[in-house]
Image 1 (cartoon, rainbow, N blue to C red):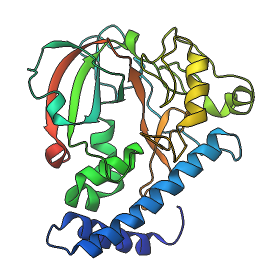
Image 2 (image 1 turned 180 degrees about the vertical axis):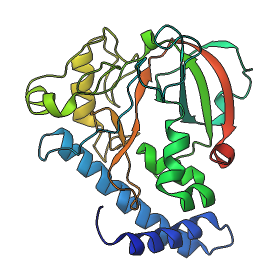
Image 3 (image 1 turned 30 degrees about the vertical axis):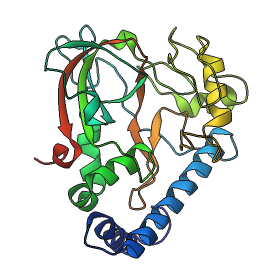
Image 4 (image 1 turned 135 degrees about the vertical axis):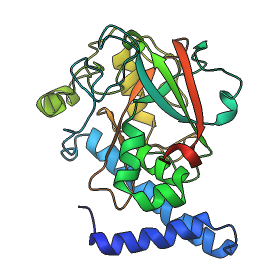
Length: 279
């Protein structure tokens, strides 16, 4: 467990979540509460950067999910490994509110997604209190997003595994042998096991590239910069989101994949995050 004792952390988080979730609270209290969360987020950015820069050994990621037919947790539209896989993304509801279930759409941007139902399962298991009182914040922490994220909904899709890549040292989607390849790979270049690259620029200030190694290295060079517009983010580059929730057992969050802009997807549903974790 990280930091001070679990009971103390839980009590602190309860106070912070209650302050942010209560509109009746004074502005000064909410500002102070947000400052605490901003501090936690800034520390997450620095820690993720240190992990990826090989300044320290990253945590084990044994809990990562792979898009693999042998993993019973993965949801398939038909025969495992020969059909579409269900994925989710935390987003703004206005982007998808006009689509109907079963409609085939084209990704209008690079979609950073998780395999369903990982987030729906793990967020309330990790922190049931915040998931109930402030599900938007609980989701943002789990996904390595800032506490002020304006995302308000979870969109669910069916996607072909052929259009997905893992934005990690090795972009393969069916394995995550990171501990074995870590020291060698990050001291040379990332491994482009799949002939796919996100379609959009790797970070503010860069142009799109079709070279995955170039995309990875350019993203690493800028995504942690606090002065860059649109940043920073605690991107791990190791296949998982950086979970900065102070009550989380470690920083390994969701198993992240990218469906590049232009990818065909089958829309399933749009759920307000306020309702997403309810039984």
